[in-house]
Image (cartoon, rainbow over all chains, first blue to last red; front, side):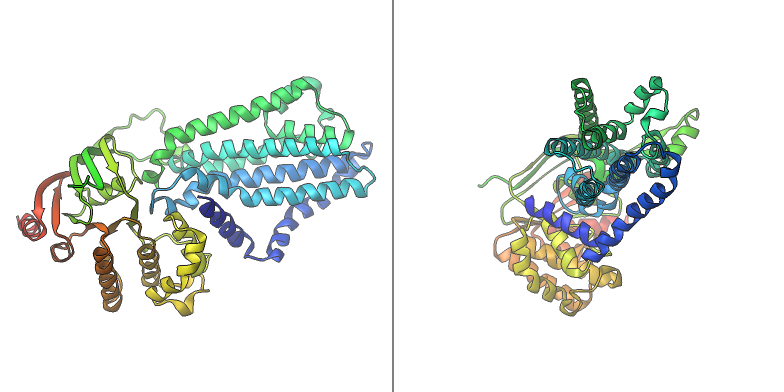
Length: 248
Length: 245
């Protein structure tokens, strides 16, 4: 099984980046360009906020991982279905390994974020980095839970990817990525936090930029979101997964 | 007598075929008020069979009689609705191998992918890579992406991997129907080697000559049920009568 997982990760990397480091760097250009563009325009709008660009890079890179990995995870069973109909194999491996490339990108993004913070005179403390790693891991788990559930649903609802694309486009503006959360009235914050990327992004900013540890309640809430997504995903997958091959 | 390697006890499988097929969220939302009927298609109806160690069993039947569904249940790809499937050895399925490669990967990487799905370790695949490519006659195309392959080349590669990966039981779907004469002869040779080495086989075909040549015993399926079982030559003759009727 370990060999199967490794082969899936390796071939996925090869397909996506044409098997070269250059291909990998090329794929990083899109979010970097987005960052430079948004920073150039919006730092004028939010000129009063000196930490705007720091908040922007954290929000944007975490978002990019979320959007990219959920997109790939949702279609994973369909895309790798030809393996499922050939031999008996655990289907969840196909879903989980499909996210591996996005996770590699997330690691690179995280290093870039740290370098950017340090180079602008805000080197994060060790504790802040540890907290950030926990939040990033929570985000990965949320994506895994989502992908498990969505991948089996996609086999039955063939336009779910289009529905999700629209939702992620709207979700980009629902999460406080290009604007500071503070510009919205406090009473709406609760609703924004229901969208899972919001707490991840906000908590990461608290730790890395503001040097504050989010409250215990905040952490419990995040743990609840992770648990709920994972449980929902696993239950859906256990229910629909065994018949996945019949829908391919 | 040793316990059968595969035992199917009263296995049934049906599919619901909706009269109107809805495959998208849009169709479900827009069609929420329309009543929708569906038709139950009983593909397998209380099928029981057993495969003894070292035996080659042929499964015959017309198109749509349930042969392929039966094979997928035996291999654990489909779940039965009712009945019990007991498998006491590892199965290597060779099903639909002509289709579904990763077109963006070269032959070597595709072999790695399929090989590891079939249960080979990376070390085993590496060790056997040359003989797999040689069996398929594709040594010079090892680094060519699959999208540049012809469909025949793709199937050849599929059989080569599967023949190298054989564990205990080989399950074959219409294997001797593809490839050119030379490749077919190679497959037959390999098949006989595997039989001599003691592997058991389940072979599906709608060609009675193939079943009587390669199997000792056969079952005939019609309408999801086994209607005859016995020496492959007799069952083959029965199958021909069924086709003529």
